[in-house]
View 1 (tube, rainbow, N blue to C red):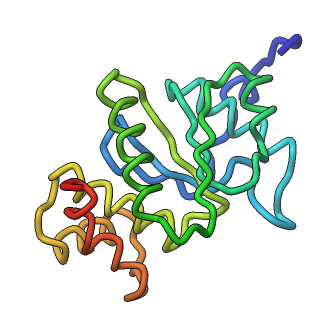
View 2 (cartoon, rainbow, N blue to C red; view 1 turned 90 degrees about the horizontal axis):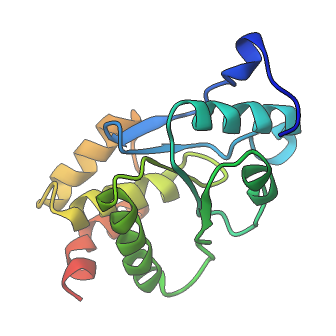
Length: 171
C-alpha cells in the first residue's frame, strides 16, 4: 500500500460477526467487505487492515468464489483459498481443511476463516473441527458448544457434520 494511513483509518474496522472459536488463535467472520448487494470495497479494505493490525497471520477463504484474494495480497495479508464447493464429498474436503487448519494453528499462526456469511455451513464446519480436534467428544456437547460460541442455533440438518466428525478423524 503506497499511502500511509493516519488516525482511526490506520486501525481499520472489525469484520462483521467476528467470533472466536479458539481464543486468540482461530476466529470466523463474514466475508470482509460483506457479501452480495451489501459488499463494499472500502469496507473490505478497512476490515482487512483491521485483521492485519490485530495480528491475524492468515485469512482462510472457504467461499467458492475467489473474491477478495487480490485485496488480501495488495494489503500484505497472507491468505489461503480452500473453496468449499457444493461437493458431494464434504467429508474429504473437511479432512483436508481440518489438517490444513491444524497445521497453521500448530505453527502458531493466528487464523481467521470466512465464508460469504456466518451461517449454518461455516458454524457446523467449526463445530466439527472442534470435535475432530478432540476438544469435545460427545456430538451433542459439540453442538451445544458451537451454538454457545456463535450465539446461533443450528438447523438439525447442519448438525450432521458435527455428529460424524469423529469418523473424519479416524479415517
